[in-house]
Length: 182
Image (cartoon, rainbow, N blue to C red; front, side, top):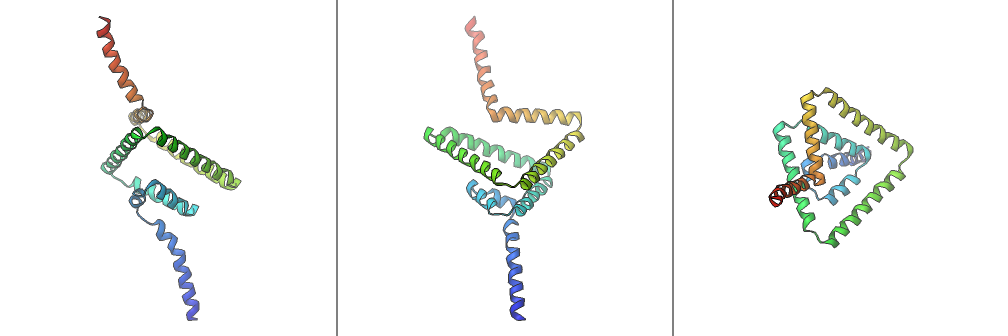
């Protein structure tokens, strides 16, 4: 009887071990390097990943406006650092990075191809539900909120694509052209 209880206790603890692994705080996971984070997420079961994403979503929704602004500023700073790092890379390093990204894309494609039809259908249904949720949020917005959201999205898009830098360069050229035309 004692051995049986010990076995049950051990198996119960073994079942709890994965739960404690993904019960880390989100900030600890975000502090991992991208490779470590990717390996950590791939080591989790789909249910654990879903629970992790749900936990992250609920934590993000619980943030105050100031905390969200701070998080946005931190991400913007990280983006600037990545951009600076990219600019300082040699052509060989960039080519290596492109090859690595191509390999990762191929791995994602392989993962998609290896999914069963049920898994694909579940993933598509999940994405459809997320899209419906975003649509519902959009429909609940006032006209002013929608205009602000559009402007913010436009600014992010131009920032991401480098249009802001391109326009700044053109504005500088335009201001020089009238002087040279005189």
